[in-house]
Length: 452
Image (cartoon, rainbow, N blue to C red):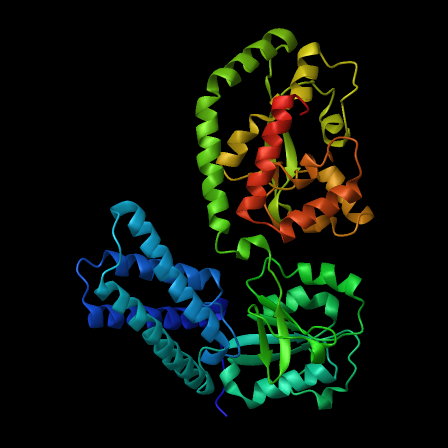
């Protein structure tokens, strides 16, 4: 059996995706060559929409089990939907119906896509069996199911896995029964993933309670690793579009941290565009606030304070000063100044209206923060809260934000920290561009009502 050594950094995953995409593009070219429609407006539009449809349908996702019959319904549906959507768009723009050559193109495209996928899947399985396009795979758990998974992976190279080893603090089987070594205890999984350059993590059954596994698995979120879970009662679990399987054992693909999403880069693009535009449009308001602040409360209109952002990295957050702290220690350790007698009328107005946070638009523009995310906290309280509240550090997996899921549910100021943690981690796990949009709209509504 050839030695399967995966390229670093998920290169096998990307190359596999490129091969599949290349096959789809060849199918498009062949379909057009057989129809020769002129002009090729419908054909180009259909091709773009088809690739987008396949992308949204996860038909370019790296999978261990690659068989065209598994994807047949989604491939046909995606191609036909793309053709219908393209026809609808062109009908709206040109007020014209499809001609015979366009119809021929769509019919041929369905066939050529299926042929191309059959060939590319066969080619990928062949390359994998020869020791290439393989991902370094780690199994969490060392019981019978984990052992069987390892044996299947070792026996069939077409799954595209190089078995690195197992991780389990309390293995159910002795080392000699496992096809690869146990590399360490469960709590060290993040370090093992990094040291062994792991591309895939399969979570099989372990003696560790699920409540303990969640924070341990979350430590892998910043690593470029795909995570699969063997479901409980897997013998009764049906396979669906986003799942995989190894020799009949189903694997559920775990939804990863938001920065693994293909649309994550759009979040940063929106941050830069929105914060830059807001700084320009709000510059007269910022100047007025600065002037009044200077007249009412004296010099030093901008207040800076260290906060903890993504990956626990500290940065200086900017705010309009509403209160001048007596000492730096007071600034770092005083939880809330809402009822402080030293607040002027203008300071109270700034805090009640949240206008004191407008300078953070610059923090967003330069990349310290995002428009939406968990609110950043001071280092003193981060140290205190991480010891007192479970999964508090998991908030630091994404950039902190000007507003967030916890804030729009009233969790700001003197409110429950444990509830904030729960809401923040819900936001991270369920992130989408639409969720960010909802949060921004609800924040704007609260601001217009004057509720902060």
